[in-house]
Length: 94
Image 1: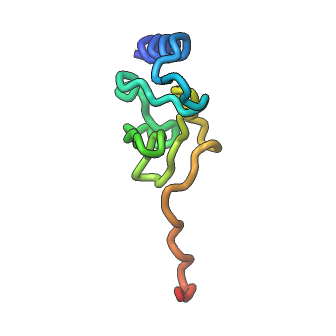
Image 2: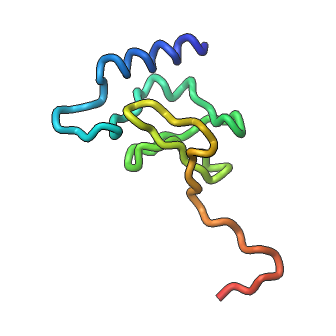
């Protein structure tokens, strides 16, 4: 199964797929067929593709992985937080 995902990544990267003339580098969209192979490296759960932000979202953990030049950056340290952390127990909320 990993071979299929690798082939899709190579094909998308080599063909410039997803980029239109005048499109800024780094904003290429995710190859839709790739989504079925991708899971969160932390939770091993499927991810949701958000076309508006061009990110892969893990709702359960509240994180989003960026997609750069059509290739998902699935390094946990590269993910951004999508929701605010819950308040610390015993603290007052304004």
